[in-house]
Length: 105
Image (cartoon, rainbow, N blue to C red):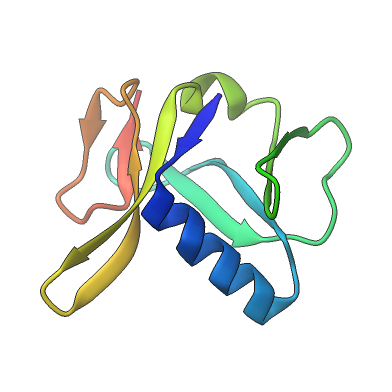
């Protein structure tokens, strides 16, 4: 359902060990100028009805409403000058905002 590059995986494991939480919530919420914004946060336990994807040292918890929209997404870690961040590469996006936060489907 979701791919994770080697660079992103290393950063996720590093951050998870620092937070002592080895699961991340990924999904979408309404908002932004293009209609949706990604949710990407630490979480202790999945919510009822979540899809759980196990990547060994880390897990992703995805709510059922977001699942179809992030199907096939890749999470990457990018370095651009002094900026470093996770990047969501989603082939289902039909629009995105210049701010890099808001997406449309």
